[in-house]
Length: 137
Image 1 (cartoon, one colour):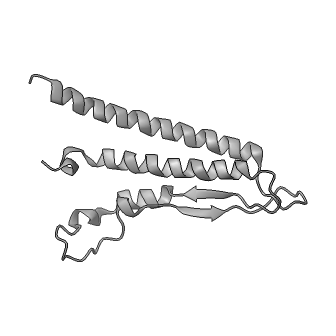
Image 2: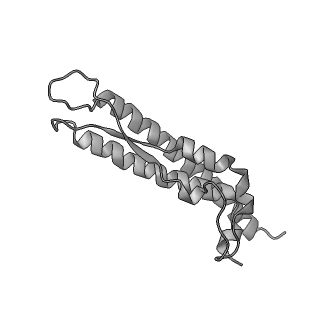
Image 3: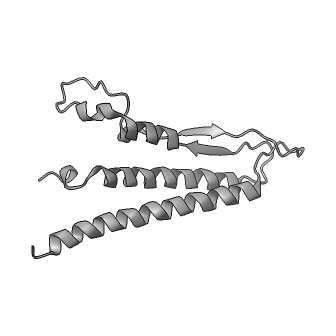
């Protein structure tokens, strides 16, 4: 039995969310590491809209099943990688560093909460699968 058929789509989505949240955390950490670097422009990883669009794409059911078939779908979950966007410098300080410590800390905490929520949901899904495998029914 192929391992892909063993899990439903939710497991794949949660795995993708964890990957993207991890990448977002790295970008936020980079912003914080450069808080004293003159001229540094902070960045954000934007992926929520792309992920939602991939989830809403109804044409994924018609995804090619053979290597010689053309992929006519607009986008798939595996193709979502997010976009790194530079933030405008609006702190008004003379060193042209756009990192706002308070905003970065809020963004980091928010990202961590979403990461932990996705981890808990994935643990629940895998725990349910483990229960089914170990049950005597």
